Image (tube, rainbow, N blue to C red; front, side, top):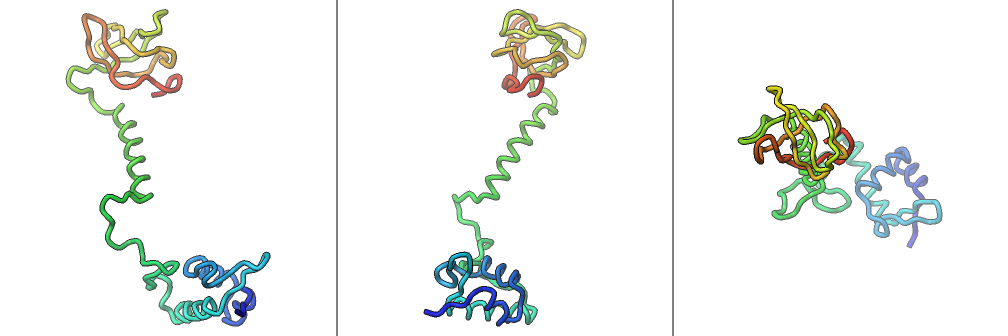
Length: 177
C-alpha cells in the first residue's frame, strides 16, 4: 500500500499544511486514513481521497459547518439519549451545586432559623458565642469551633433558652464557609 507524506499531500492539494492537519484532526481516522511513520504523518490512498473531497468542499465555500460528520461519526447534537449524562451536563450540575451553596448564605433564614454573627470562641470546642441582629448574645452548638472567626455570619435554630444549633456544615477553612 502506497502512502503520501503530509507535506506532499498539502503541496499536491494546494493548501497549507496546517489546513491539512486540522482536516485530519476533525475528519480522518488513524490507521484507516493516516499513520505515523517515525515523526511524519503518512496518508493512505483512502486518506488522500477523503482529503481531496474535504479540500474541494472547503474551497467551494460549503465550509465545515455543513458537514454532518466529524471523524466519520454522526453529529452528537441530535436527540439526547435518555439516562446518559454528557460532560456538559455534568459540569452544569456541578456548577449549579456550587452556586446554590454560595447563594444559600445570602438567602433569608427559614422558619425557626436566626442569622447571627460570631463574636468569640470559648474554651468548649463545641460552642461559639454569637450576636443576633437585635443585639442579643447567644451560644451556638457546633461540631468544632476551630474554623470560626469573629465576624462570620451563621444560621442557627433555637434548642433551649439561649442555646442554638448550627444550621448546615461547619466551615472547612478558617474564616470561610
